[in-house]
Image (cartoon, rainbow, N blue to C red; front, side):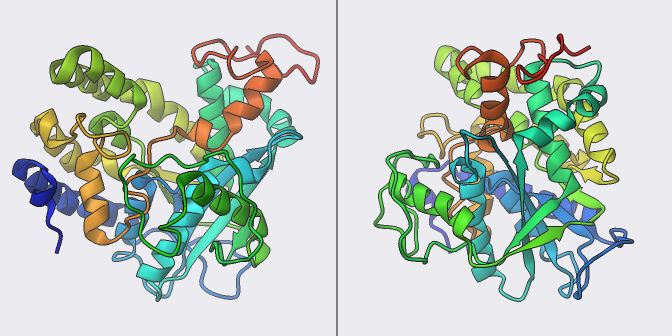
Length: 380
């Protein structure tokens, strides 16, 4: 049993997290029970009917963990993680791959009877260029650099074509060390397990390099027609870095207004774009965080029962969800600092360097540009 009150967490927030847990569990159940079976499979075992777009962050890990109770035990659940590469950027530099492998190992240990099938989708930047025109047509009328980068990550992830990583553990000897920290944890987070004594840069580096040295790699495609996606969590729970900036400038009153604005614009800013992109691959995107009961409950809460911005990054934002992660036993994702998919997968890095010359010169709201590696004008 957790002793949350001893950590100074408001009792009302603890109670809210318990109700949120029950509602989110029911939302996941509604979206995975009786999911249609795939019509195509190359596997000798049962194909997965449910997949999770799996960044390794708290949103996707909680959805995957909750789905275990509602998907038949003899079916695998596909955990699909996408990372982009270029001649200058390797898969081992993807923060999302590092986080996903860390959470994958924890989930295998927590639910050993489940076949968690980790599908690593590694996308060379040349493949992005080959499919650029189609992706641009899918996101229209949106046309910003940010929209293109996010849509590209979702498009390749939802195709689900990659390799299966059976063992993503960090136990192999000779893993390289690096001073570059791929994963950002809350400053006072205690990470349990064999790597607890490592510094954050060393631990993150080990996971990242394990991505390219995993013990078993075999071609694998997910034919799951239902994909669980964590959209809506950050917008409702104060998960983005901009939410902390708003709080720092205007306190909780400003944050309340910001989260209300986020909810009102979500359908135009995200949902049409993401649904079109994912549906183009014959997949049904399902969003448990946008379940009517979940949204209604979160709207009924004061922001103080959702997050605690006086706590450090990776702990205070989305605190109500972090308590659920700790309660169900997925601890390692519960103190990770949020990275948006375009940054965690490294598509923004690959694309911005090509189109703008550097990441620093790129702005998310800028109009998407055609690649500098081929002739062309701005995308229409």
